Image (tube, rainbow, N blue to C red; front, side, top):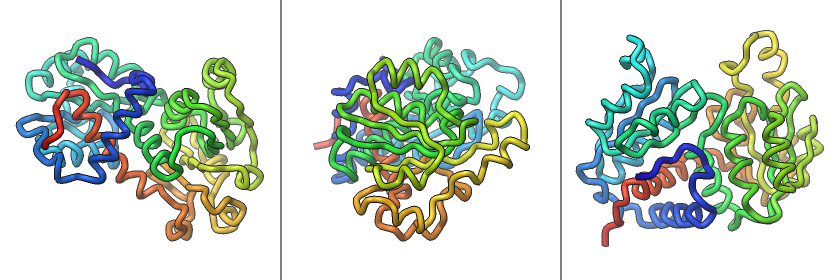
Length: 307
């Protein structure tokens, strides 16, 4: 039995196979409509989510399976003080696979250590978000045709953004990847990312304050929101939340084949006027997330595709 807690739990080769399966699902959706008949996915979401929770549910329903779970800690026995380890022991009696989002880093690992079913980390605090990373990898590969020889701009909240941390960890395994890290000084990537992931892997990266200056060099721009829920004080949030707003003026500085991604939800960091630009790929990215999660569920449950 395997779990997915970290984007590095799958090797580069295994990740490639998963993305290939997701691509086949995209191209032949009806072929997969019954591969999980009789299987159940439990979604254990201890903090709010729209895209991640619903895309997991859509993925399992697309595969012919069923879904059960809760969408906040208040609607579970966690409100009565039940531990994660006890919850997963109970859920293991009801479901075949579990997706967990939790505000505390490491909670999905605790669940995996006590689970009789595969556990998928659907986001733990500011730590990891591996299924978003797989979605991002599929998006980049589908849009650019490769996962190597790319300059990736990461913009916004690089300190608390778990999607950013997971994506950096995953992309450093591919050849000739360069990062341009665009943020105010207060929201730069954590020291462990800078030292242990980027420098230790000899990855070229630049940290800068200006989005305008970075735009001409980018193959992919990965925008993130400044997350109010990750701040300890509201004054800092208000001061920094509007630092980087992508608009038509900035897009004129970009290459014609540069694509914009965003894990969503957005607040105002991407102007709605950008939505009609052919390079705006963030809504397409959400669709890729369903295909990736379908492929992941199949892989962890070890079910075969239909003939």
